[in-house]
Amino acid sequence: MNVGILGAGHIASTMAKTINSMKGGVKCHAVASRDFERAKKFACEHGIEKSFGSYDALASEPSVDVIYIATPHSHHAEHARLCIEHGKAVLCEKAFTKNAAEAKSVLDFAKEKNVLVTEAIWTRYMPSRKLIDEIVASGIIGKVTSLTANLHYNISHHERLVNPALAGGALLDLGVYTLNFALMHFGAEIERVESSAALTQTGVDGTNSITLYYKDGRTAFLNSGIFSRSDRKGIFFGESGYIVVENINNPNAICVFDGNDNLVKKIEVPAQITGYEYEVEEIVATLNAGKLECPSMPHSETIRVMEMMDLLRKSWGVKFPGE
Image 1: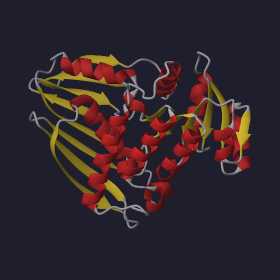
Image 2: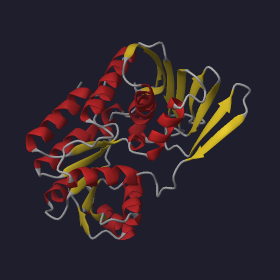
Image 3: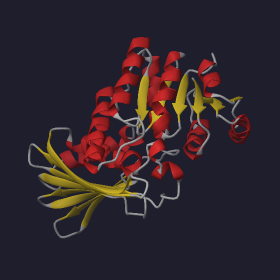
Image 4: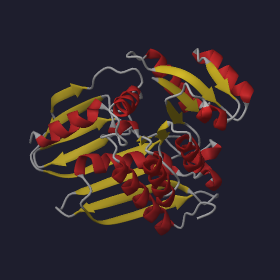
């Protein structure tokens, strides 16, 4: 299976390294950048056979089966449609698009063209997801009443994080993980949402706090930001203890504590290349099966998250150009 990478930035480099270390016939076959010299350099660094100076050339390349989109959020819809138009399966980085309207348009177009498209929210595909659910469901800490999840990195110096024209802000880059964490493990039966955000001088959210109140009485407390480093933990609180997920962005361990703060169990997650391999494995398997949606991230969930983020941004007064 030949994978093409659309975009030649940092995250694209991580994907190339991942695919090059995978087995099972998956190959990083081509890369495209708007700057041909950059694409050529990227290809040389990662042992990639083909390089292109335009995204259209990559989408038109007959030997490419799947295209991984690694451009800013603001351009995901445009680039996904380009790939779909040429019949290429698409693995599109999160956030899937800048808003729900774009997401629906892309997914409708994919259905019309009979093309597989999925969102590369890597935590949805990781084996840690099932491990966390099993531990919570085991009853080891009794009835679970709430969870917290945080994700902060000191990344405000990157233009794409603060530029509204690039659909910047903490929510679409980091908050998308906290929302997915809650939805994966608590579900979507939400009664109401409360939130607040501190905006940057450019008008996007620099930090945010989101509370999801579930119909069954459970609560999820979520926060993310682009100015500092946090512990990135996800914690489930139960009647007789708590469960700590180390790093919700790429879980490396799950620790269970009793009501006296004693560590009673620690589960290590399986060894991995980078964590990106799971989404690649699933889109390849789904493509080979002739299906149009990856089971770990159904289109309905992609739309759900985009709609939630639209409502959050609206309540904060954050708008992107063209909205």
